[in-house]
Image 1 (cartoon, one colour):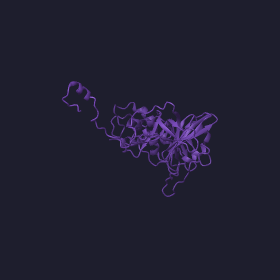
Image 2 (spheres, rainbow, N blue to C red; image 1 turned 120 degrees about the vertical axis):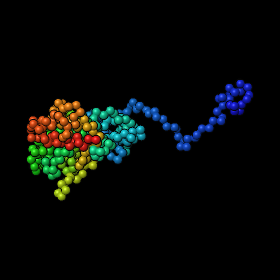
Image 3 (tube, rainbow, N blue to C red; image 1 turned 90 degrees about the horizontal axis):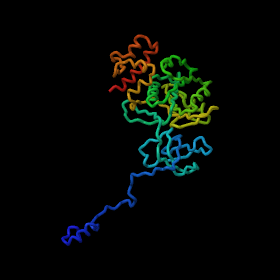
Image 4 (tube, rainbow, N blue to C red; image 1 turned 60 degrees about the horizontal axis):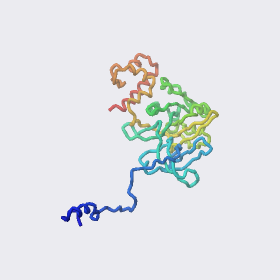
Length: 348
């Protein structure tokens, strides 16, 4: 009997609840329908991501306790579109014993304090997250072989200040060239500087600056970054290479980003070693953040007119006037030139 029957009202009322004519679409997979509701995983353990290798994550559980152990984990399906990087703190469930052959599962990324990012180039809006939760950046540059690149260091500084990370500088191979002319470019910055030579790496001095911090180490290929990391972290075994005598370029040796514990008598910290790069795109950076990398110029910029671009044609720019009057010393012009070069790159 259908619902449009002309029988009495009692039959009509009954027929309203008759579902015999309703057709339902069968589930072709024969499984339960998906739901967007995800478990809270209240029992998950928090771990530090030490490294990433082909979809597998090495994480450290129960850090600084007697039960500290490394565990291999995979990401949960709901995180497949979210990057998990070295330095992340993540929630882990499943087999967290760390025994050979076991695999845990990462179900949540904890809130990040900082993110170091870069893009392929300055016109690329797609950013790549390199490291999470670092509070320091150690920029490694060689005094020679390969020649130091001021512009690349400026870009590292911009990325660091944009992320809220405090930068430091280490100049290697000072036995090959005097680093003073290069360091003059950064005289106006409150930038801790270490120098290193082949027969003497200031291991204890650098360790003292790293203990208690999460420090990401960056640098051009061939500058001796991996050699430095191997010196301050015994047993790190980071691959080292050489500089091509024809091109003057270093060979990429470290191919992955990894966290390593650095220790001294005062305690420990973490060094996050990254692969060497020859370029560092800043397509993701807000132009307002660029001036923060030049703290000496930023103080003078407070006297600039509202909306000042600080570019060569900017009227009444306080920075340009200070340089022209010689108030910033011999390096003032180089500092302003570096700032304007980066600002011009982002001018739309």
